[in-house]
Image (cartoon, rainbow, N blue to C red; front, side, top):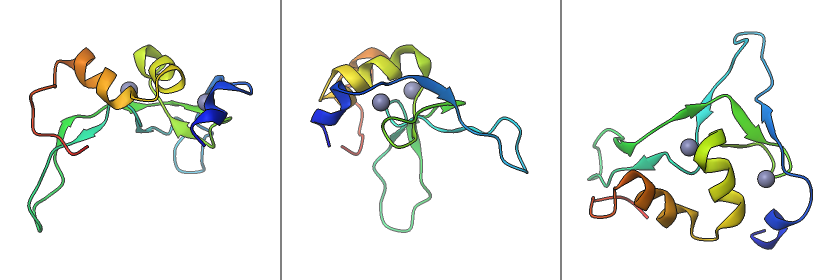
Length: 95
Ligand SMILES: [Zn+2]
Ligand SMILES: [Zn+2]
């Protein structure tokens, strides 16, 4: 799965509209970072971004154009990279 990312054609595409939503958005796979929580606690995020774009070559993974699209495809440790980018390194995040 990981190795497949560097082959094939990866383009950012708008997430296809649905009957209910003309411009659907989803949480970005890279920069949406859940905070640690105890059982029963509501889900919280250290950082969260919604995007209108996805990579269809990756099976419809939602990604921000900048910088997440590139990070996701270029780096195995994209989660670490985005935390550095967002300055979240010392925060209490789920891995
Ligand atoms: Zn993102
Ligand atoms: Zn892709």
